[in-house]
Image (tube, rainbow, N blue to C red; front, side):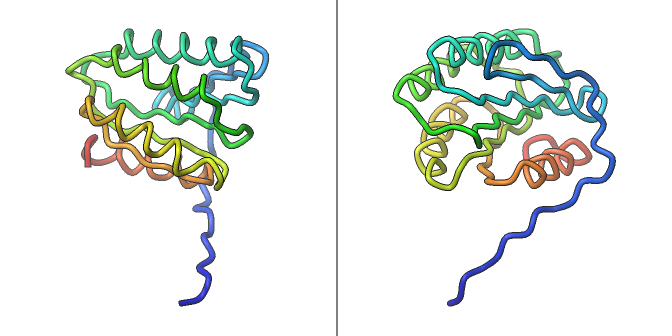
Amino acid sequence: MGDQQVVATPIPNRPVTTREDVHQGLTTEWLYEHTILCFELKEVSRAAIDAWFEAVKSHLEAWPSGKPYAVIHDFSAIDSTFYLRQRSTELSNFASEALRGRSVIVVKNSLSVQLAQLFARIHAQWKVAWEVFTDREDAIAWLLRTVAGSPTT
C-alpha cells in the first residue's frame, strides 16, 4: 500500500453571496446564493470561540424549515483547544428536530480525529449527516452534491 494523494475537487465559480467579519478571527460566508454557510475560525481566543458559538447558535435557531442544512466549520487555521471542544458540545442543545442536511468540518490533519469524534457525538443527536475534510473545496463539493440530491444521504 503506497501513499495516496488526495486531490481537491475544483469548484468553478464559487460566488460569495455575503461575507462578514463577525469578530476578530471569525468570518461567516454565504456561498452559492445562500446555499452553503461557512464559519471560518482563525484564532482560538475565548472571545473568538464564543463569537463562533453564538453565530452558529443564532443560525441554528433561525434556520428556515425545509431548507437543507449545509454548513462548513472551517477550523483549518487553528488547533483544537479544550474550550473549543466544550463549546462545540454545547451546540447539540440548539438543533431543531426538523433540521436536515449536512455539516462539514475542515481541519488540519492533526486535528481531524479529535474534532471528528466531537462532531460525531453532536450530530448523532441531529438528523444531519456530517463529514470531516482537510480541504475546503472538497467540503463545498460534498455539500453541493447534497443540495442537488437528498439532504441526508
